[in-house]
Amino acid sequence: MKKYLSLIRYELKTIVKDAFNVFILLYPVMMLFICGYLIPQILKITSSPDSNAQAITLLISFLLLIAVGGYMMGIMLGFMLLDNRDENTLVNIAVSPITISGYATFKIIYTYVLAVASNILMVGGVKLVASDAYAITYMGMSISLFESISYGEIIWFSGVSGLIVPFIALIFAAFAKNKIEGFAFAKMGGFIVMIPLLVLLNSFQDYKQYILGLFPSFWPMKALLNEAIGVVGDWDLSFTLYLLIGSVYPLILGFFALKLFIKKLK
Image (cartoon, rainbow, N blue to C red; front, top):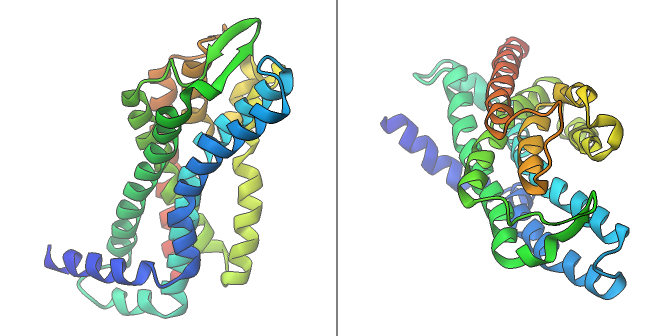
């Protein structure tokens, strides 16, 4: 236990030394400001409350808010693992009482906790400060996106959404040779993580939505979206089932990503 307490102290000291890590840590606060204040204020002065443009903008903002938390923390962890690899930290760990696998698991756990906290801050924060602003007309119905979502569901969603962290970080660290490649992968991954937003299109309302399920962020996103709009299609699953699949699937991907990461190191 003492060795892990020492690691925690070390990580807390080093995580804020990198400007990129500081940006990631502040990212939830920036998203809370943008989605909770800036976007509603812009829409308030540029469009009428019942316009299609406003509804689409608010829906996309809502999905972006619930899509990026786990990905951003996974990228931060990936960069930290790259730093550890470049500084030969992992080589030194390999001959210490803490194995590479144990060290990677330790970093994954505390980054996962940060991912959960950031999602709660972003989604729960917007519900707290700007719930009324996210009232739209959808399929002829007046809907308040945050009114149908409880804080308990937000916490559950956040816990599941954060499970993408190990997969993102370990794949990132396994394939990126250096930080320059890492930034390229981060940009490419940012586009990929947005693909599940296609679930808003009519063509993905039936069984074709599960094509998007290849991307692990789809499952928690779809769960919370259905709760928000209160519309369940013939091919939709329950909130619980979406989250159960969203829990198991990224853990399986993360397990194989960990194996691949350790293999690359050797």
